[in-house]
Length: 221
Image 1: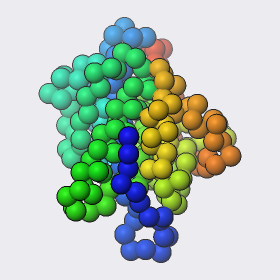
Image 2: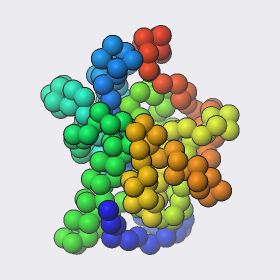
Image 3: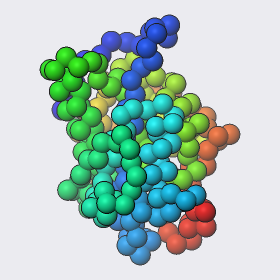
Image 4: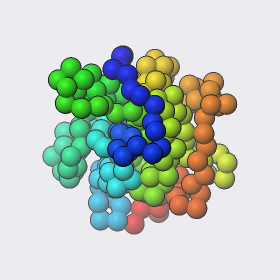
């Protein structure tokens, strides 16, 4: 994976940094009895719609949505205006494969934009998970605002504990994609670089609870 290269962010420049949203929504919901999480409903919307909207309203664009289990059903039923839908044929191998698929798609789009002279690509991606309905646009915007340069690494924290969303400057995309394994995602990569990782406290804005088992379904409304 390559990237066309970006300049460092100047806080006083007129144009804000371009941060793409990357929503991982490929899981089959095995612990939910095979109910794909993207198709669960929350506040009148599918979870995938809710999470993609949080990324858009939090200032990310474009928003890439990685699909796997029930991908065709999501395409047919979900309202995802302006989103780039990315199929992950290896979704059964875990979240790491979806993270790689998403980063590959963002990087390829940036390379194409550079070749065509259609404007700068993304300087960072902000990674979010489809099964955390308590994380909304306010938390997205707060973590997005932590961007400083292509080497930025930042993550939401809840009571000092790292969580999602996670901001990856473009200088890290290749390394993260290479290291992403099974369901660990970028965890190992971030752990090895914790001294460079900015934690952005979001406990006052968001609830990072997952929807993993039937006992968690009470969090949906």
